[in-house]
Length: 351
Image (cartoon, rainbow, N blue to C red; front, side, top):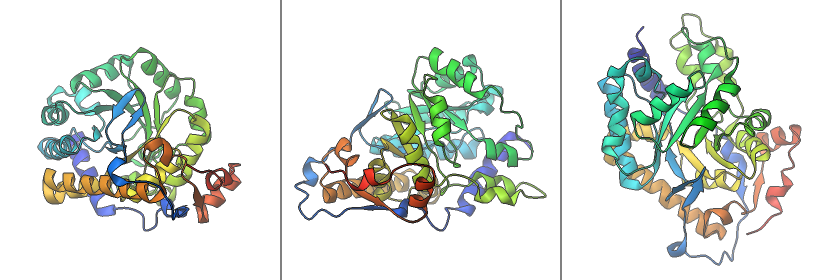
């Protein structure tokens, strides 16, 4: 099967598999404030991550590219939506265009449609410094997202089986590239141990990428004659992955992603210590169903929901939202207790 066909399959299967039935983000409950002393008019949701100033903590996470005109059309719609709403956007893995220049237009369209926006390039951890720089130059990117997708590769019939030396390669790229480097898990969660390993690598931002959103094991299993179904339930749930990453990475910038559905989920991620939240599947569905206008309308709704939640808890900016008291329940509380993370620090603080 060609790489382009595989990219198209990823879009189709991402939409058909959808999100998990339950989200670990529902384990996060804000402590109600009857006297929030806040006003929506003065709520500021701007944020800085990895040295980049963003007008919104919501970003369109990496999805596609390299699959011919179909993926170019999706990226064009997403880029137009990003431009209309002022959110940052990451393209999908650019490996296909690095290997075949003819596929580069499926990524370059993002910068064409969003000339002034914040855009992240994207590669795997197997690339060289030169290839990473090529990906950045291809779309005049403001940062590089390096994705970690071990489980996806292991389930993928034609995937990689050798992951040696990845941390060293990431470190070289982070220290030699002219733009910030973001390390992102594709949906199986960053652990405390992984975040700690990355601390001295020169990486600017970690995207915890927990399980609960697009499931790349399910997607790749649809392409296998004999599925590795046991990997479909693999991974660290989103809420736990964010807490583990923040615990190891603080005070660095953390992006939370994995099954983010609405503005309340974005607020929950920030209250866990994240600086921003990535959305992929939900935005992709809107773009496929209703084009750029539909995706932009959805993003505006999420932005409004976030500011509404901030007003409810008395947070006038992102720093204050990171101090809002929350209670962790259910499986997330159990997971973090077993991992030695004291969840009471979240519930006993105040803005």
